[in-house]
Length: 216
Ligand code: SAH
Image 1: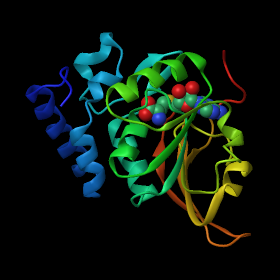
Image 2 (image 1 turned 60 degrees about the vertical axis):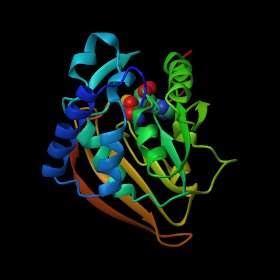
Image 3 (image 1 turned 120 degrees about the horizontal axis):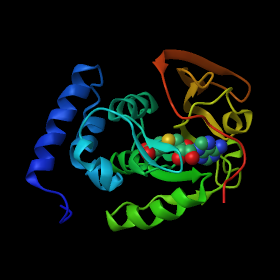
């Protein structure tokens, strides 16, 4: 356990996990990851006291750490198996990446805001989490590192990025909230052959927008 974590935090996490279970996430690997990860260490000091509320909070650069239920829900849809290659678009605080690492994925994560990219690259290894970090535009994905077993987009996409679909292996899954800035529909898209994709809808969410290009 990190020295900045405590039994009190652990107790708060247990309650958070119970709330997420009641809201419908039943994948035990996902719930165990949330029970273990010290979310308060991913947050700005001004919001630390709220770390175990099931809400999104600001993390700087106009971005947010996603609501724990949303992280759990997206991760459950992704259905990660140990050692699968997962691409995350929108590193942000690094919390979602930590959840993916806890359940055994090899994680590649892209962030377009340089400030957040630099911050998370210091924080995650301190907590024992080692994804591969990239600074860039997630719309393009990481063509030289693909294909991926799973891809997760953690910002609201105005449409499904074609380049990302093409970086999925056959049988691979993309989980992405799609829609305008006010609200998005969560899609689970499975590549069932080279040419064919199957889409399922999984409810409405609100994310910060997925934007083009990078911010220095
Ligand atoms: N997964 C994060 C959620 C952060 S919010 C977490 O667990 O904290 C979404 C993040 O996506 C923001 O940091 C935002 O800067 C980033 N983002 C938005 N558009 C992007 C793009 N095209 N490429 C990469 N990152 C992007």
